[in-house]
Length: 348
Ligand SMILES: NC(=O)C1=CN([C@@H]2O[C@H](COP(=O)(O)OP(=O)(O)OC[C@H]3O[C@@H](n4cnc5c(N)ncnc54)[C@H](OP(=O)(O)O)[C@@H]3O)[C@@H](O)[C@H]2O)C=CC1
Ligand SMILES: O=C(CO)COP(=O)(O)O
Image (tube, rainbow, N blue to C red):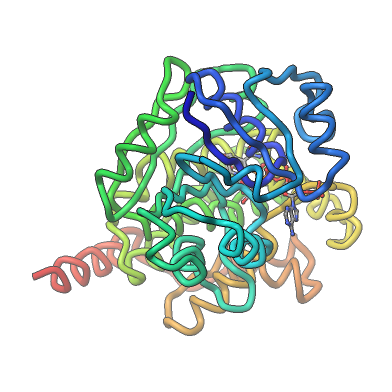
């Protein structure tokens, strides 16, 4: 039986371990906390992150990275974005053979503002990795753990590697598409969390469906503007990892980003909100990264800027909405078709 090392035993690492176990793989699920690894190994549960779910005995918890990596056919990284580089450094010092790296992280590295595949390529030498793949799409861990129908994409510039990842995860409830646009998939997956915070804020303020539809659609427009400028394919943003993930994250109570936004919209302060959540809320740090990237690359991202100001500058959420609504008149499609035209010119 082939083995996969899953690095990060939160909700998503645990749910993806269940998919791999259902597909017949042995899974070594690494936690940086021994008591959590022991719970997974001995009780077959992960109560903090997936309460009430019983894990397959093909999933073994471990807090020893060397054990997790030993003989692994692939490594799946599912730690918060801010922990990625440190965890990769630990992996590099324990890894003995080249292996396929897959990550399911929807964030940008704080400070460097790098995408996760860039961080992996910087930290893991080519002699220790066969390829890097990102797995993303509309997929709440809670629903995957109930084996509810779910679709995701696996993206890599190396299509053969993406197909290997597709083979690892594909099954009758977890449908996996390949995609060759790593930049678009990573940018869509990370930045939708900012918009999900915004959706929660709107709900917290008591606004309705019109406002949320506007936020999702215009949020996607600005994500596409930035992503396309970074080299992404514009069509990726209307796929699973763009529009698909926006829909699921902006409309679901499972979303931690939506829930955090909802508390902010009701008037709670960011520190108190994050303390209550007790799980990663990637959109907060990603708002900082996206706002900085937009300024650096001279891309208009008014929704991201407004959410950044609510999070870090103490702007009242209602004032942020009012200011967004009162901006200058605009054409809906023209700025998007400019980005598309620029992309076509670049590729000629
Ligand atoms: N949950 C979901 O439905 C989905 C999540 N994702 C993405 O997956 C990534 C992980 O999210 P998710 O599993 O939900 O997060 P959770 O908050 O559920 O879990 C995070 C896990 O990472 C661990 N961790 C935190 N810091 C470190 C560190 N420095 N070193 C090692 N481990 C660490 C936590 O341990 P501890 O308990 O000690 O804090 C915990 O086990 C995020 O980027 C998220 O956007 C993507 C798709 C779906
Ligand atoms: O990415 C997700 C679903 O696709 C999970 O979103 P949250 O991190 O907001 O819970």
